[in-house]
Image (cartoon, rainbow, N blue to C red; front, side, top):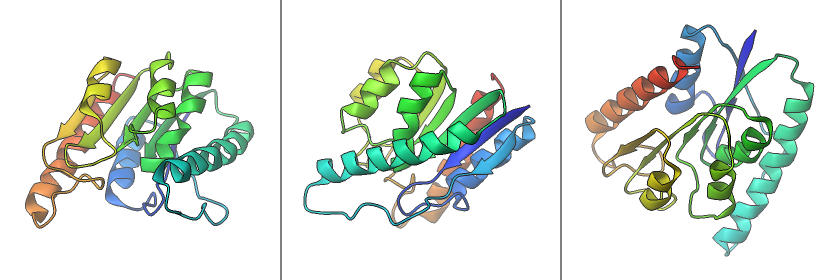
Length: 181
């Protein structure tokens, strides 16, 4: 049996399009899809974004550690959005394949986790997202999808048609990736 865990962002649930369609893709490939939910209030956003991201990383790490400890399926993959990508530490530790949607690459801990991951993963982000770092992405030498002009939601402000096309392209990239697992 195979299970994929959809790991939400701060304000981006598994019902939102990027995670929803990633789950649909994995289901198409025979995976059981499980949505991770945050059990309590997330850390409060203060004036220091790096501190807040470190607090979010710790929160994700702790909660997902408990989720993974209960998981009995022998084959697990992860799909994380934004702060959900802080689960990359678990993916690296356990050798889990993953899809990381709009990862917060400006915080050095996340690229370090990605560098040490032995399992395949796909990155997806936009060039107008301050959390996306094209140099880090290219340095990882892993498959990635990069949307020109897209923000942290992988959308282009004021251009819904282009945003839907980005969603289609990201979904196709996830489909290609999931088909290799």
